[in-house]
Amino acid sequence: MEENSQQDEFQRDILIYFSIIAMMGLIILISHLQLKVWGIFLIVSIACVEAGILAYYFMHLMTKKKTVHLVLLLTVVVFLSLLFWPAWDVAYSPRTHSEFTTF
Amino acid sequence: MQETEFIPYIVKPREDTGLYNAKFGIWLFLASEVMLFGSLFSAYILLRVGSFTWPVQSDLQNVPVGAINSVILLSSSIFFIRAWVALKADDIAKYKKFMYLVILFAFMFLGLKGFEYYQHFSHGEFPKTSVFMALYFLLTGLHALHIIGGILVNSYYAGPGMYLRARDKQWFINRVEVAGLYWHFVDLVWIFLFSTLYLL
View 1 (cartoon, chains in turn green, cyan):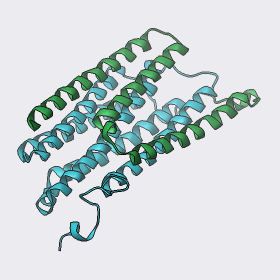
View 2 (cartoon, one colour):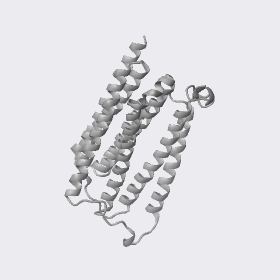
View 3 (tube, chains in turn blue, purple):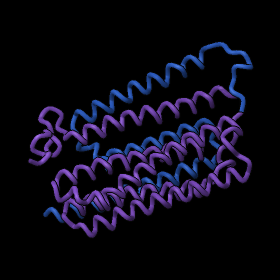
View 4 (tube, chains in turn blue, yellow):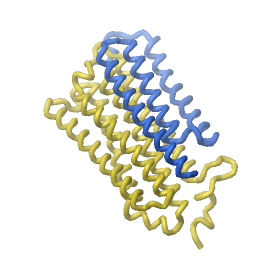
């Protein structure tokens, strides 16, 4: 019984493995299509899905306790706040030419 | 008297959190890692948004090598899962075999990363060359340090650390599980690094 369940889990992991590789191939393809802003949006979205699947199955987030979800939720909220605060500031503050980053 | 008898919750989960000590600890550590890499990704986004010009990253990067490295790291994650399952099933030979594969693939990853760095240096691309190259070397270098840390921990559990299993089997299984969570996280970070620094 346990052996069957382990076999099922192994098959699931292999399926996830190939799904993530396929998604990786997809984002490489999208990067060649020169979609500009839409390309960036798609690539980041697919990368988030890839990472989410990896965390959900390989890191067993699906069976984790509330405590872990709470720790992660708090981390994400703090991180996004810290990210968008300066992003908002950059977007809405008037700047002179010299204040832009030069490559 | 064994440690398991006087340190609570190192094998059995706490009733309130539902987690044993090491697992709770590793999730808190991973949360701090999210903040660390997150702040660097934020720096990347803000510097890129705030610049007039930005290089076409895929022209500067070796995308095929980066893609191969992604597959290598993902494969090592699968091997880690197999190793942990084998350990739970008391199949030590299989556990060691998969752990050595994890370590081998980690070295392959570092080898290819080193090759990429060599290519950059031979083209005169250094961290001081541009904002993008500085961010690239910082982020991938930090990630490589995490890989090295993972290799050290995994090598310990595959080799000299095996004596811990004799003290308490379940405790050892828990330790390996925690090391695995870290390893998957390192893989997860690479997914974002590859997408951000090679393809955008």
